[in-house]
Each structure stands twice: as C-alpha cells, then as structure tokens.
Image 1 (tube, rainbow, N blue to C red):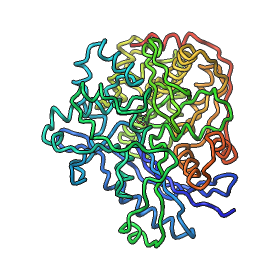
Image 2: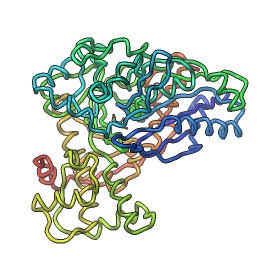
Image 3: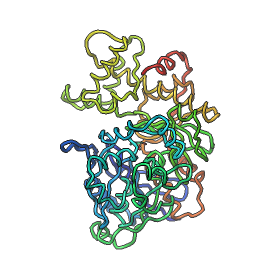
Image 4: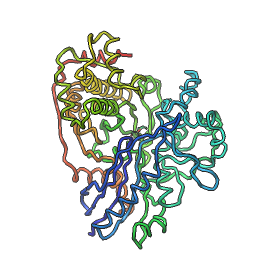
Length: 489
Ligand code: LRH
C-alpha cells in the first residue's frame, strides 16, 4: 500500500488553513502546512471577502507542501456556508463576495409573512434565516441591480475556489443547501423559491456528487506550483459543517454533535429531512450533509462572541492575551450565573461586544454597577453551554431519540471551559474530537477517489483510528439554569 498525500483547504471566517493528510490504507496522519487569519474587509457600505487572497494563499501552500512529499494525490475545498459570488456570461467574477454580516438581505426576509416563511421551510427543509443566500441575492437585486442583471452563474465560496483551480463550474450540494434555494427534501433547485424571488433557474450549474472529480488542476497552476502530473480536485462535502460531521468517530447511526467554530451547529444526522411544525418551532433546519445525508441542526452563534471579546480586551490591554488568561478573568466572577441569549440579534455584529453584553446583563437586572470583563466572559461561556443543552433537548423531542453522548468537532472542541460546562448543563458525556475535523472529513471523503467502494461508516472508522478523544462527564446538578436561559429574549 502506497501512502496517499491528500490536501484539504479549510476556510473559516476567522482563519483558513491547508492540511496535508497522509493516508496509509488504515489511518490518516494530518499536518497543518500553513494558516492565515481571515476577516471581512469593509469598503464603503459593505463587508466583503477577499477570495483572490485565499487563492494566492492556497497556491503558496501547494508550493510549500510539494517540497516534502513525492506527489500530491488529490485536493478538496471546504468553507463556511451561505456566501457566494456572481459570474457574468464570460465566466468572470462580477464582484468579490459579500459577507452574510451585511444587512442588505434582511429587508426581503422581513417582508415575508409568517405564513410565507413557513411555506419556504416546508418547501426547502431550511429554516428562514437572515443569513441564507436567497435573501442576500434579493438584497443584491434591489441595491445592485446592474450586478444582478449581469449575473449568469452563482458560485458558492468553495465552488469559486474549485472553479479557480480547475476551470469547472459546479454547485456542491451541502454548501448549496445553505442558500435555501436548493430543497433538501428533493435535492433539486426549488423552482417555487426561484419564481417567488425572481431568481433565474440557470444561475445554477450541475450539482456535484461527493467523491467524484470536479476537474484537474489547470495547466497554468501546475506550472506555477512546479508539477508536471495531473492532480484531481475532488467534490468533498464543501460546507465545513458537512465535512466536520463526516469526521465524527462513531459507528452508531444515532449521535448528537456540536460543530464548534465561529458558529456552533448543534444537531444530529438523519436519512431524511424532518419538516414538521415542531422542527420549525424549535428553530431547527435540515441541511444537506455528506453523501445526501441530512444534518438537522440549529445554527447558533458560537466562538464568534468570545473571539470578539478577546479582540476588544487585547486592544485595551495592548497585548495578545492567551485563552488561558481570558478564562482566568472569568474565574474572578463568583456571583450568580449571568446569562445572555447568545442568538439575540444585538450580538450579531455590535460595535462593542463587551459593552453590548454588559448592557444586556444590566437591562435584565442580572448585574449592577460598573462594566467588568469577568462577568461578560463568564456570561458567554455559561450561555453557550445552556444554548447547547436547550437545543439538544429540543432535538431529542422532535426526532424522538435520546442521545447519551455529544461529539464536539472543530476548533471550539479545544475550549475546555465550555466543554465542561456543556457536560454539566446537559448531564451527558461530551466527547471532544479533532480541532481539524473539517479537514479530516474533507480528506477522508477524498479517499473515495482511490477506493471506490468505501462507505461513510468506513470513513468514520478511519477517522476513529486517526485521532485522540477527550471525554467530559459531570453530574447535571442544576436544571434551573438551562430553564432560565430558555426564557431569555
Ligand atoms: C459555519 C457556517 C454555518 C453558517 C455560517 C455562515 O462555519 O458554515 O453553517 O452557514 O458558517
């Protein structure tokens, strides 16, 4: 058995990285080759992503990785969901992708009646949410009509990178389901949604199939990187959540997960979408996962809030504080557990996160007196755990299953404080998996290019042999805190 050298590019909102996975026929060893921070760039009225910069980073990383291995065998791309760019009929990107943290999409969501929102959910399986691409696309139509008129194709962020690398345009299904234009029930573009919003059906390309080749690296890129053989770019579950869920090391069909990064995706894997009133009322959504599985989940604010707080605290202390230092500040607080509704819109993109949280705590009579960081940080940690506990319990109700274990995947799985609190508030066993779960999932799916008969279970077995797990279990001592959290507005 020769070792396969498999490359993953995983782009998150706060950083992107290239990971080399070496697969020896049994397990994968991973190495982070390079990493850079990512951020939205505000130009005049809008926040944009810089895709050319990410592309350049990837090419530099390929040059780097090539130095130490004989051959790159394949490549797969994952990114966050919902964002996209429009291409004209000559296949040129019309403008850099806007970030979902812009507000231009909100108007068209707010214009929908409750009945219309419910209908959108029953049609697509996806919960109406202001970040869904369908609303952004509508915002573009209204605010940037010339751009919309010129649009011939819509590519999601990973589709853009795949296109830059291969010259082939496809729409990958897990990522496309975050638009709310693809129905996760039929797995086809919803003509009803297209017609309702005046979105041309032909903006969409062929829908990719997981494990198949999108195309080979373009000759000019091969020349730039300095290689003379073909490298296939594989259609992996390119929504980071979908790849991270592949990397859950279990042989069970019934498991709960938290994919923890900028966002926290709290959910379970199913064979079919569940489109009931209960799902709708619990704010759950049915996204497309790997190999046509469904991930039913809640899209919750995640590490974004605490990352923002750290940034603000770093700025005022004029140094790069470690996470341990940040956690220690929270430990200084010993009053009653402070709670915020982490999904309240006021925490979506405030000017000052710390102050916004403190105002919330004051307004809800949880705290008096001058601003202090301890209570703010404590509130975020505690509230994240409560949100997880509340969501897992509504998930259990709507799908009629009980979970014993919760797998935490992604960068946030290394947040020990939140892991322990989650164990405490859920009363369940928390299994923290790999920090690089998205890349592991991405890499293990690429194995299908070399081993056609490999199943999703086989992939999870490979992951299981490849990583170390940390477990947390704490008696659930007080349910009243989760109840208190559930009542917050
Ligand atoms: C998580 C995620 C999430 C949302 C958001 C924009 O990284 O992909 O599922 O779609 O980013």
